Image: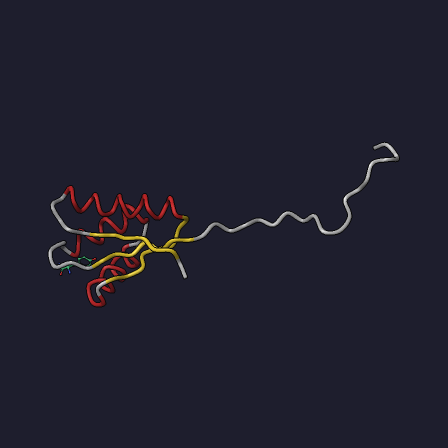
Length: 101
Ligand code: TYC
């Protein structure tokens, strides 16, 4: 460093910004079998048997349930994969996403 170089003064700490998070929401319907919903929750969202059963029953009783929270791309991809799995099997199973807060 030459003696004319100027050192930065004051705070230069890099702030790591957290990405906005999105909820994936499971919607109830009258047609998709409970076991199928549980299978999709385990396969796409990696929930345990117990977690998947509880999420499915909460959606069944209250009409919707938050499955998990992810960054936007991951939330949208998983919601599409879950909805598509239902569609391929002939069920109206539906997952949506919404920003957290
Ligand atoms: N209500 C469906 C039934 O009685 C089961 C179900 C639960 C479907 C949750 C969708 O998100 C859902 N067969």
